[in-house]
Amino acid sequence: MEISRYLDGELTPARQRVVEQHVRACACCGTMTARLRTAIAVCRAEGRRPTPRRVISRAEARIRALIAR
Image (cartoon, rainbow, N blue to C red):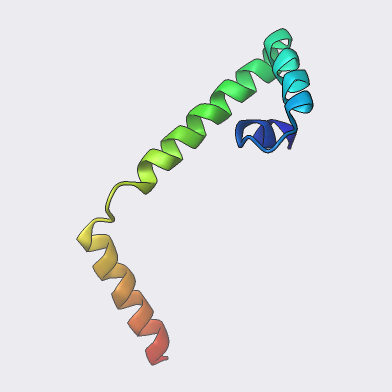
């Protein structure tokens, strides 16, 4: 999807300008871009938080059980 590539900075400068103009002019694409930008920010912020010890313990126990089969 071009909007994803746009938000990731993967477009050429010329193509980026075209997408920016479209996103400003098209309410649907503007809304979708804003929501995707928010989702990306939330995912990045979540990735910085440490995994709770109880989650790690449950995952380790599950992996041991699968290996034991």
